[in-house]
Amino acid sequence: MTERAPEITDRDVYITRAFDAPRDVVWKFFTEPELIATWFGPQLFRVPVESVAVDPRVGGEYRLTMVGVDTGEPAPMEGRITAIEPPEYLEIVIGTYAGEDDLDEVVLRLTFHDHGAKTRVTLHQGPFSPEHRRMTETGWGESFVKLDALLP
Image (cartoon, helix red, strand yellow):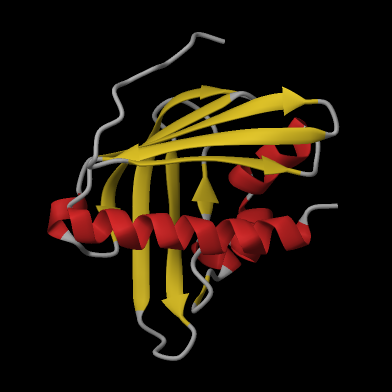
């Protein structure tokens, strides 16, 4: 895999998290619609599986809609895959994110590090305003708690 090390700024979310599952399993939870729908989004959101589409190739779409559990309010995320090296690296440029104008062209970079029975995921996403950065960091944290509970 080609190492990617873009600058991390105070406008970015940067998280490194270890998961107790092999890399190929964790990769599937980020790339298979049926699995993405089981964990993606903060605690007060769900993702209907029919809203998830992943075309795992450069130029392919990556989209889903989070729905507020209490409000029913949809929060769509639509992007294009700009780099993919299964099961090591996934990069998505998000063109629409929850209808927020200032979140266009946010880049999400995910690196999956193989540690045998465990996987370390490095997430780098941005740029964001300070408010959206905090919300995104919280959302990923809550999503990862849900993912941890589902991994075999």
